[in-house]
View 1 (cartoon, rainbow, N blue to C red):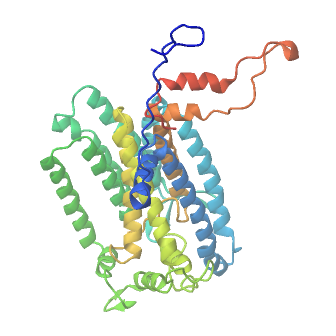
View 2: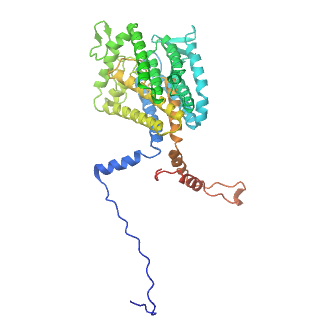
View 3: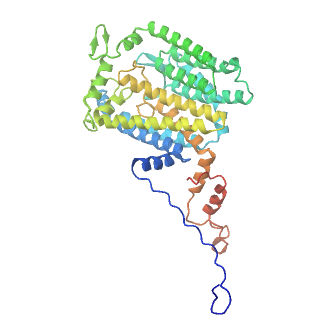
Length: 454
């Protein structure tokens, strides 16, 4: 045995650490897929998608409203930026509502359900009072509030049905009553039919379709049996068929599906065909922002119901696909929030809001593409209309609040506190400084942090 210079046996060496085995670095398509998958599964993905997607849709919508409404405003002897300024004001107010809704606790959202429902029903009934209700394009669903400002109470009825229906179903689920079909339908379906009746008295079938979609979305999330779901759907389909058959205007819109000429027999399909013309002339990258031809009096409602057609003409296929991608991301994020929560109210409310925005976007874009009848509903967050923008932005605030309330998302947000700056003590310069806040938040969040993600 070898000895050291002092004659003593050498001390045994501690076993060295085994060499770390490096995983082979993944390059190419497979590596990009795994990196994208890890990024997609982070806790704050839904939060970023909802906030960023809604911000981009609203911002691009303001630009397109300004571009699409200039000619209409000048034809009405108004300044070219008239509609844009009104939409910008609504967007600023809506941003305040979004921020307030995103900071409200879930209990306050549930407490607002009944007041919002009562207010919506009162205003929707007030529309039918002579001298108060205003008729626009043949539909009496508006109330004049002074000057050139009008509100459409039926838009707030969508928000009311989502909040009240989610609170109702959540309370019944807590009491284990949703296994009985009577408790699942009553009073949710009668209240929805009350809102639908008030809307249909004014003749607005487009908004009624969106409200019906919200009702079906809530029933689906509540686990309605197939036979019950099919029964309610059949009743709604029969009522819708009767309403279409008894209205020449609705029958004309149905007959314009697939039309390629503005005049097809006794039915005038001018708006539907010129919407296709606008999309077809845009090409891949469009004719340029502000260079639309169809908005010069050829395309009715260019800044409201058919703003997607003007977007296709000026921004081309690239612009329209970008809008579709933003709505798809928003819909995915809403489904993710609804699927990952344990709170029944959050699940129903998030699912209802996602159904509302997705269904309305599909109906509007489908009508512009000639795949669905023209229902007269705006593109959410994009088309001109403050009455539609305000409740939609409040609903987006709901989704943001729900996305922030997930345990993993709360931990990730706590990790993102400012790392610099110290909190001064109350005793001036000589007082002892308290420890940095970000260290406290980091330790507090370490227990709830999942899989090392931020």
